[in-house]
Length: 114
Length: 116
Image (cartoon, rainbow over all chains, first blue to last red; front, side, top):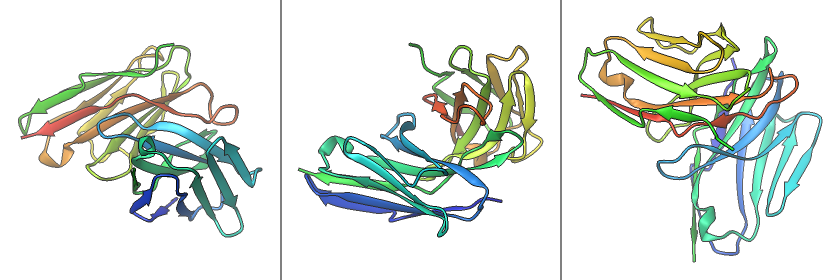
C-alpha cells in the first residue's frame, strides 16, 4: 500500500523567513496531494492541494510543487508569520474504487519566532 | 455554513466499556471517512462510506470497531470492549464527491477518547 514520508519533523524559522517541508510517496497511482495545517487541539484544515496533472500551485504565501517522476512533493511558505506556527501534514491519495482515502505523513511541527 | 461536527468532543471510558462516537458531515456530502490520530502522529484511515454503503473498512484495527451510516448522513463509530491502545483522537471527514469529481476532505474537530 501507499506510504508517505515527511521531513523535517520539526522546523524553526524566524519571522519573515521561508519554510519548506518535503514529502515522498511510494504508490505511483496516487493522484491527489493535499496539505493540512493543524493547530493544537484543533481540526486539520486544508490549506492547499495539488493534483497529478499539475506541477506547481500557488495561493498567496503558500505554494506546492509536485515531481511525479521522483514521487515527491513540497510545501513552501514564504514571509512566515507567527500565526503560521502549527503542525503541517502532507497526504497522498491513491486511486481506489473511485474514491481517495488519504495516507498522511507523520507531520512537521513549524515554529515561527518573532 | 456549517462544517463537520462531532460529538462528544471528549470521552473517558474505563477499559472494557463500549463507546459510540458521532459524526455529522457537511449537508449533502456523499463521502464520509473516519480516521484515527494517535498523539504526535498523522491521521490514519479507518473506514469509508459512500452514502450509506461502507465501501472500505480495511483500516479498522479489530472486530471491536464498527461503523455505520444508515441513512447516508450521520455516521457512528462504535468501539466495543475498549482497550488502552484505543486512546486517540477520532476524526471524521466528508467530501462532496466520490473522488473522481471532488477530492477535498473537510475534517471535524475530532473526539478525544481516553481509555483508563
